[in-house]
Image 1 (cartoon, rainbow, N blue to C red):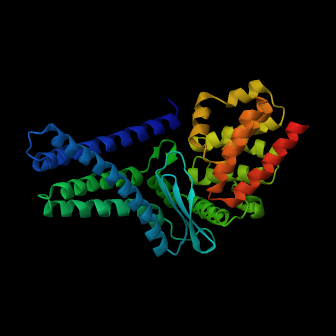
Image 2 (image 1 turned 135 degrees about the vertical axis):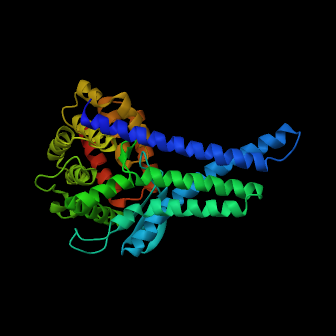
Length: 379
């Protein structure tokens, strides 16, 4: 078994043990709450309704802890000198644009939310980043322990005690899942990134660059307008580190925005071939762009279908809210399938996504590429 597969299995096992722990806590406290709070009624409907309420409270508590987790990142980031950029729960996203908070729609596969901030001005290496990374887990465990304390005070109040117990369970669970260094669903968690930041000085700089680039992108700045050196991997870079190889992936996007598709293709292939342990979400993004470069290049259907696997089709569907994905499928329908009806549907979908998309510069870039696709179709 390869070293990467062993690490992946370890991460899966640890995550599984945490879920077992959550289940155990849920069984112990949940059984206690049901036993103490279930109304003594001979009417099955009343009992079923009460159990349904417990399920609703569990879902509510989960979303409360997601919000608290991201709020923790914000609070600890703010205390460390960061500035607010965006706050996302599920697909609902709030972005700071020209000193105003605007509502947008966005989603990242494998994440329930995300709070992004602009890092403090510095040399790009020496800045507070540990508390910002672990702030979410600290907030989860703090609320969880507070709810446990309140539960012992209000254990005889049926619905309130249920909500408090659920928040305790999910608070502890979220804290463990995010603070213990793991890769879950192909995404490095906060604990994994924190460990990288402690061990690798270069990783701190790569994180600073990512946050700085994202902050500028949120203001409408295009990647091609940023300094080229920001997208250059350092010599002898540890490409196994997700915080470092992320810049390599961003370099592909930088070249793509400059319309240097040949260089972008080479960069994508280099990242896929030379980066052990590259996160699956990055691999899927690179495969999508390589598929696109083949479509606007030699357009060999057999080569395109090598990229267009069942796994990638699922990823494309899961990221249908990305303007880049709509552009890819527009090119696929127009240039590969020669289906103008489906191509127009993709174009309509692109415009619908663009209305609520948080990154205006990316929308502008994709509009330019769609014009190029149209020129290929007419030639």
